[in-house]
Image (tube, rainbow, N blue to C red; front, top):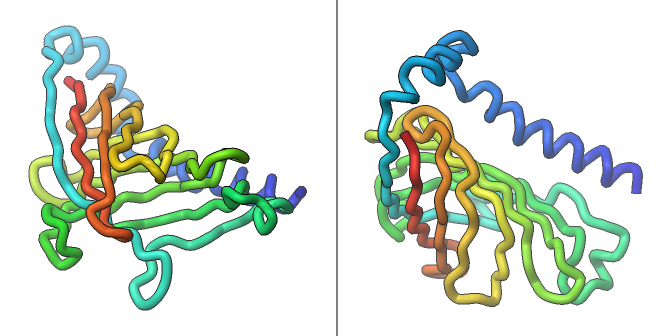
Length: 185
């Protein structure tokens, strides 16, 4: 049990470090942005559409189990099983289509009754208009539903102070289609 707590703390730290480091301009520049620029900015809506490719095994694996609880093997939902992932994001459903970033995060089986995962996702954009920006998404993934949604709870770069809704559905067992409506400044 102690090992699981240590792993959970390490996972949280690993996820938090990129969030802290993602403001490339430094604390003084961010303070200036809040005081001088933010009052002049208007809120805008950006709609995003992309695909997320999840490989749970084989060559090119992008998701790995990091720990499980002492009841995971007997639970009908796999309760306590947790994965870390670093999945490519592309403009099309083909994994070989143009890559625009990485979907990095954590998923853990969080329900004793239904198959649901607690998701903490960071969409890290590495190409195009949003290069260097991130969106943070948090929520429950009831994998039995055809279409699901999670909350956009933050962002960096172009997406500072972001909030919104991410809807998603499985295109295939390993390809997830995302549509995100995000408010930001």
